[in-house]
Amino acid sequence: MRTIDQTTGEILDLAAAHFKVPREQLSAGDDFYRKLKIDSLQALELLTRLENHFGVELPDYEVQGVSDFRTLADRIQARL
Amino acid sequence: MSDFNGKTLSWKLSGGIVEVDLHYAPCNEIGTAMLEELERLVRALPELESQASALILYSSRKEGFSAGGDLRELYRLSLATESQARADGMRAFVHRVHQAMNALDSSPLITIAAVHGICFGGGFELALTCDIIVADKMARFAFPELRLGIIPGFGGIPRLRRDVGNAVVRDLLLTGRSINAVKAQTIGLVSQVAAEGEALRLARATAAQVLKYDRHTSGVAKGFAKPIPLEELRRETEIFCELFARPQVMEALKTFVESTDAHPYLP
Image (tube, rainbow over all chains, first blue to last red):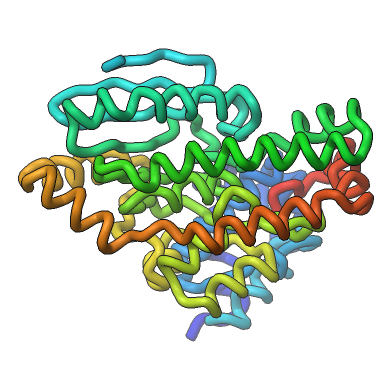
């Protein structure tokens, strides 16, 4: 079982790699829309990548209104 | 017409397979332009059916298979008419969509949707006319219509109910949430999940397999295994048109079209 810190770290790793942002520039409290410069379509893409990576199903209404990595990690952790 | 290059879609026939490429920016929204060319495809089907055994429907738009109905066009056209004419116009449009989709659904060609990215609303309904859906692992399927105060109007509910359990239909319809390709395969909607960017390749391999069998037998088998739920489609149209006539729908469309919300693809 992953810890919340591990889950958060994996999200940040995945986001940095896919959206080509230096990993050291991302932290848990960041607004991922702003930091990754993504729109809603790309946010859905991120959601899909996270679902595939963690092997969970994350309904998009659960992430509506969520814009920071830490809360996103909480939502995922609740389904691991 | 073996090949066609249109504004919203193109098709080509090669080696017994028709490949239909949806390429209307931004993401294959289904409005009058797309419908006219889908109707053109339907008119070409008898000739294509005499030379082919399979048809692949795919999108070359990077955003996905299709974002669904063209809501901006719908709102613009609706603004220009008073409410009764608006309702009549919508009924006529939906009738044309159903005719085109029923023709694709019942074609003796074995039809395969190769889906990537977003496959929402009317786009999902178009994919559901196909016999087999292959999706890449980044695909997402959703019926977001309830947020506009309507239900899917292009045959989505009866066709989805034909393929999967009613509990799944209710979940997708009533929450408007999107599901990924793996979930879609688990519920029986998607037959194969491809690696990212590989859905068309898998669809072509599937079409090549289909080509091995006697066309007449395949067509008969398809007709037996995939009856068109005509009565449910008729009822869906009635419910859709009744809901569409309500003033709340115009308000919701206005909100959608004028929205600067950063999350238009989230329910």
